[in-house]
Every structure is written in C-alpha cells, then in structure tokens.
Amino acid sequence: MSGEILAGQLVVKACRRHLADLETAKSRGMRWDQELADRAIDFFGFLRQSKGRWAGEPLTLQPWQQFVIGSVFGWQRWDQQFNRWTRRFRRALVEIARKNGKTTLAAGVGLYLLDFDGEPGAEVYSAATKRDQARICWDEAARMVARTPALKRRMGSVPSRANLHVLATASKFEALGADSDSTDGLNPHAALIDELHAHRDRRLVDVLETAIGARLQPLFFYITTAGVAGISIYQETHDYAARVVEGAVQDDELFAYIAAIDPDDDWTDSANYIKANPSLGVTVLINELEQERDRAVAVPGRQNAFKRLRLNLQTEQVDRWLDVATWDAAAVPGLTLDDMRGRRCYAALDLSSTTDLTALGLLFPRDSGDEDAPEYVFIPQFWVPAESITERGQRDRVPYAQWRDEGWLFETDGNVVDQNAIKYRLREIVDDYGIEIIEVPYDRWNAAKLATELQDEGLTVVPVGQGYASLAAPSKELERLLLSGNVMHDGNPVMKWNVANVAKEEDAAGNIKPSKRKSTERIDGVVSLVTALSRATVAGDEEGDPEFYG
Image (tube, rainbow, N blue to C red; front, side, top):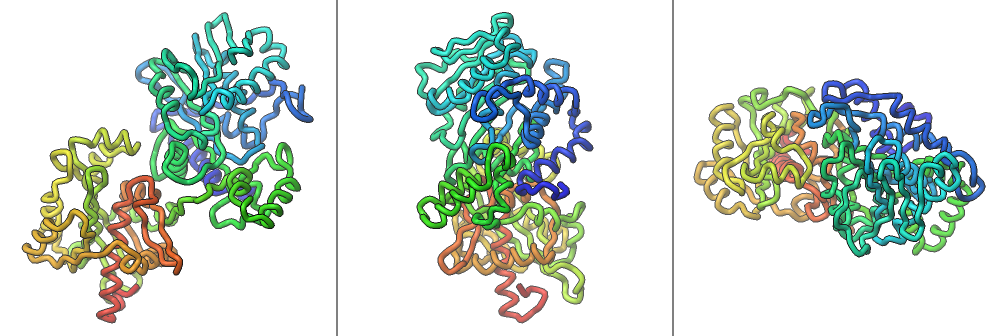
C-alpha cells in the first residue's frame, strides 16, 4: 500500500480490501482471527521441501504467500446454519507467473485441509483437466509427507492410486482428473483446481462445486497462470475476481491474489517483473527472466508465451476500458433526480434482449453560467424482469434483488422487460421533476415500437449507430471527461459493475468504442452514456454552445 514493495494494481487493491475489511467486516458478520492465520502459516514451517537446492529444508513462506494463507484461514464469518464461526472465504484464486511456488503452496494447503482443519472424513482433491496434471500437486504433497516425520507418522500413502489418507479421521487426499472414469459420489471438503486456464470447459469444476453437500467450511483453491483471453471458465473466474478486488462487486466468500504486470507497463522493462514474480530473488532469478525476455524480443513468436507465463499477462488480452477507481472518484453520494429539477438532459436508451439489462442514461449538460460545475451530470436508470431476477443474480453473481430493494434498479412484471415501464418513467421525469428531455438517442435494435410511441408523445427520438462512426468520438470524450474530473454521477452500483465489465474495441485508425462482444458481463449503462454523449457533442458542434461542447 505504501509503495515500498512494487506490486501490480490488482495486488494493491487486494491489500486495500483486506485493510478496509479490518475496519468494516464486523458489521457484515465477520471477524479477523490472528491466531488462526498464524496457525496456518506456521504449519508450512513444519513441511520439508523436496526439490532443488532447498530439498529437505523447512518450507518458509514468502511474504506474498503469508498474505494468501493468512487471509484464507484467518478470516471467519458467523454461520447461522451451524451456529458457530466458520471460514469466511470459500473460494480463493491465486494467479501468478510460473516458478513462484503456487503448486507448492497448493500442496501445503491440501495437507492442512486433510488433517488440520477439524473436518472429519475430509475429502481433498487435487483436480485438473487430466489426472497426470492433477498428480503434480498431489505428488508434491506426497513428497512433503515423506520428508516430514511428524506427517509421515500420521498419514498413509498409496502412490499407485494417488492417495494420501488419515485412518483416524477417515480422511483422504487424492488426484482427480476430468478424464477420470467416474466423478460420482464425491463429497469434497476441498478442491485444489490446478492450472485453471487449461480447463476447456467447466464440467469438472461444476461437478466438484455441486458435490459439496453439508460440509461445514469447504474451500475451492484455484491456482493458475494467465490464460489466453476469450470465453472460458478461466476468463470468467479471473474477470469476476478482478471486479471483487476492485470493489465493483462485493463477494465476501471470494479471496483473490492476482500478481501481474499492469497493462500499461513496458513488458521489456525488468524493473516491472517483480509485479508478476513476488518470489523474485528466491525461486525466480532476474537474470533468467531477462535472458528469456531478450530471446522474446529477438524472436517475436516467443513474446506471447513470455508475457503469459512469466509476466502473468493474458495474451490476445481483452482490453478493459475504464478504470473503476477513476469512475468512483466522480461519484457524488446522495445525488438524485431531485437535484436535477428544471434541468435539460439527453435520455439515451439501450434496450435489452432476454438476458441484458435495459438502461436509460440521463445525461445533464452543465447549466450555462455555472463554470465551476462539471460539464455533465449522469444518472442512470436500470430495469430487469421480475420473474428472472433471482436466476439472473445467480448467473451474473451480482445482487440484483438487493439493488432493487435499495432503489438502484427497477423490475417489471414478466420474464422480459416491459418497455411501457420505460415510457412511463420518461413521463415521470418530465412531469414530476420538470426536466426537459432534449433528445432520446437510442440503439435501433429492438427499439422501433418504443421509439414510435415516444415520438407520438412529443419526444425527439434519434437513432444512433453502434459503429465507430457514431461512437468513436463520444468514447474518447468519455475518457477525457473522467480524467479531467468533468463528469459526476450518483454512484449507482449497477453502473459501477457495468464500468468494471466494459471492454473496448479499437480499429486500425485508433478509433475506440465499447464492445458488447468482448465484454464478458453487462455493459448497457456504459453504452447508454456513450450514446447520450454522441448527441451532446453533436449538439455542441452544431450550436457552438460551450455548455454542450466536448
């Protein structure tokens, strides 16, 4: 947090989250237990390493590893079902470059969960796409047991079955692959998911997650290096975890440690390499990284592998667009439509299919004469169908029902958004708040009927294409407004989630626009904002009026 240790932004944000939780988690039914954190960290000191120049030596956790283990095992929550304190984090993602010790860390976690977590009949699985891959973590754990006398006396081993076991508690630790003959009958206390980026589908992960049953405090521990960007369980997990540590989504059951160079870093500058390699100087040597970098510079075909495996940077990377912290800085808590009474606005529509949000973006240009005010105020409105709000929340892993109850989101009857609700809302904005709607810009898709009805009510509706010709200029304008502090908004958490989700597309000429195709989750609010800006900037150009000017 102080900058004394150079770290990537997602690591910094994970640390910020931990420190903030120390102050606020009690109000959410959670507590920090230093003794439990120390107990788990100290356990690793009893283990003996099995490879390289450290073979036979105690396993001393690096500071980053202490942060991971302490966080995962030190945080607790009050469990109403069992009427006791249990582990807070049920899922943990550790994403880091190769050779930083993530497999060794996972092996130690597996042994701790096998016999030192207080779970009778514990079933711990090292799981991967193939059983041979799953055995890498299991083999490391078995070698630790063989070299650690205290564990060797407690645990039996059947290498041919990749099985460690504790007869006294009827517990076992086994390797499991998606290619195994059967995954029926599992009741995992813990699953160590190795190299998540290599999983082509989520079949094995789903089997394990749905087999938890009535375990008191199960843990899914994902370890991976960055993958190739695209639709996958890795991409889904990575993107969601990034949104959690950024604060765009609150999920008190997920811990994430993602160590990577930042997208704007010079990948050839070895000063940045510690961001992806926090074990630099211990298990990773800088001269080795620099030699690999030099080969990658000389042979471009090596570059993607070097960036992904050694700098933990996704290749063919989805280009996330807007910075959540910059967006947060523009929020004005308590801002409502009451504050906009009598103002003029653009009311941009991005209508939904059966799965998207419907968004109405209200963009208020600055009143003439008020030069100290920001150029724009933005207040979004969102709708989802009532019948599927619970299902949507589970699928998108965001609290739609909570947002509805808090007034950030409207619901309409049925299983698709009733467009009449939007029409009525626009009428309320005009009649109840005295707001003048300058135009209603809209994406043509699925909007012909509503556009006609709004026009019949006297509103000026303007179709806006979704290509570079229409959206490139307002997209650049949005970047300028955020960086210069010339836009403010109401802090709607649905919109913040959209901002965290949005990826951009860029053409050969450097034009950009928000991309629903590349974005893995909903971005409808951002699209409505850019669509509104497309008309506001045109109005400024046409009228020469500085209050609209981009």
